[in-house]
Length: 227
Image 1 (cartoon, rainbow, N blue to C red):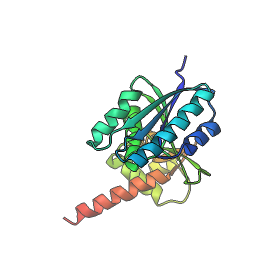
Image 2: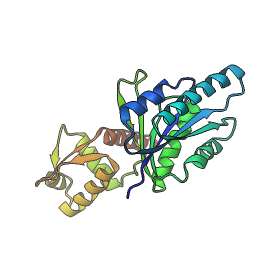
Image 3: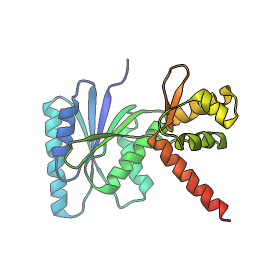
Image 4: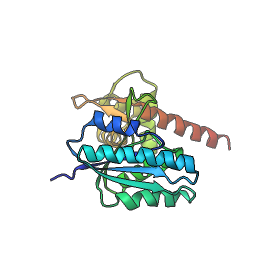
């Protein structure tokens, strides 16, 4: 049986964003909510943070969800900030992060831990919102791998085309065998650099992430060619 989800939030001085996100998402598959806030030394800000945390914990109690509140010390090296987060979440293997409130460094640490936990094998999703919470984004939690020279060649070709190109046409243009192109396309697709339709012949196109990768590699190659 699949483990239920633990929702993870950073919180600042208001409970509104957390409560709204939970109420809009629903709690049917949720087992717990971990809420992180910054341990402030300034009395006024400390009181504001505590009031927000108390409101969230009361809300969670009212809807029957276990809350894990945690105040994070941020006057520490970044890795130790991440460790403080891990100290709460290490037993939870199905995590959903909401990067929507609280201090910037806390949100960065939460997002970094989300990517690290995903890389280490946990089931992880991450989300953020526009400031008014009118639009929700799913954030990537993996860093794609660098393509090989052969993969770059395919991206470079697809990047010069508008729309889809059939895989067998890519093989002809690049003078490569179809199995070789298929293997490279499979890698690029898994990294999110291209997307293909499962039809025959198979059409593929470069994604926005693939364009970012292509631009970055072109920039690196351009700099190398100057020396």
